[in-house]
Length: 129
Image 1 (cartoon, rainbow, N blue to C red):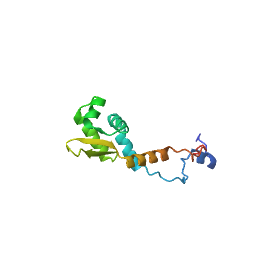
Image 2: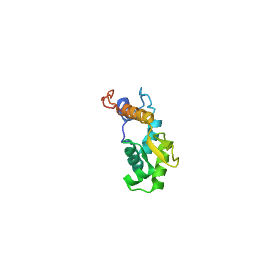
Image 3: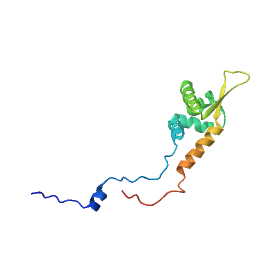
Image 4: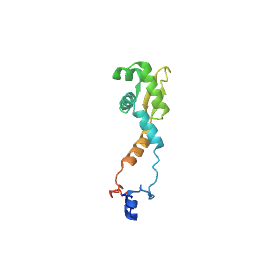
C-alpha cells in the first residue's frame, strides 16, 4: 500500500531546477579581478592611495606609513608588475626611484569598475525558478 501520490506535471515543473537558458553575456572581468586582488591587500591599497596624491620615493612611503623599506619595496614591485604603478629613476643619482600611478592603467581600471557597477540596465523582474 503506497501512501505517496503521483505528482502532476505542473507540480513537478515547479520543483525542478531552473533549466531555461538566460540571454546574458558573460562579463569580461579577468583583468579587473586581477587589479582588485592586487589592491585588495590593505598595505598595497594604502601605498596606492598615497601615490594618487603625488609621486613618492620608497623612503617617503616608508615614513608616511611607518613600515619597513623592504616591505614597501615588495608591495611596490607587486603594484608595478600589475601595471598600476610606474617607476622613474632619478637622472642625477639612479639609486633613487620615484613611484606614481600609471594614469592610463588607472583610467582603464576606473572605467572597468564603473562599467561593472553600472545598474542602469538592471532588470528588476524577480527570478522565477
